[in-house]
Image (tube, rainbow, N blue to C red; front, side, top):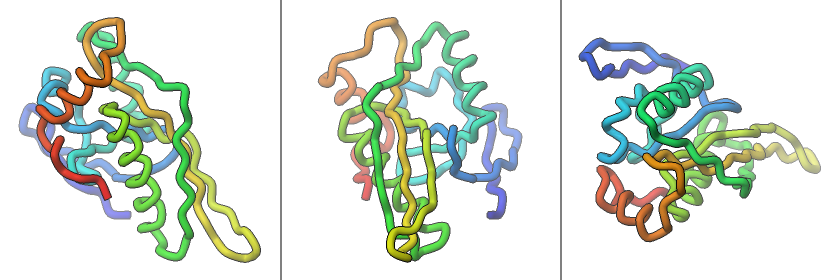
Length: 160
């Protein structure tokens, strides 16, 4: 897959391969997260992707700022037929992003990607966990998270 070019906060251009794999973290671009200056690249609608290496930097950056990255125990799952090549994985990830957004969380980590066959039919099974980035040590209520998503950039875009 060709590398994409993105702009860093200091104006430099960086090339990052937009490869979705286990460990990839997706972050919704919201105004409330701008103080963290998360380096990422566009993935879908208001969602940005960070590879596994950038994901470890994300945790360090969040801790340094005094914010928290909450992990939600409930596993999100999507199974998609593998007829469309690279589009198959993207379609499955978009379904998981829709589930994350419905819960009003601003982050998601892919934890499992498995290509299999059932009766000769190829499919991809994808699992993820919702995560949430925010200041403070107590997770915000659903109403607060909803207000943050609606008030942030791209919050009104539907995820298909």
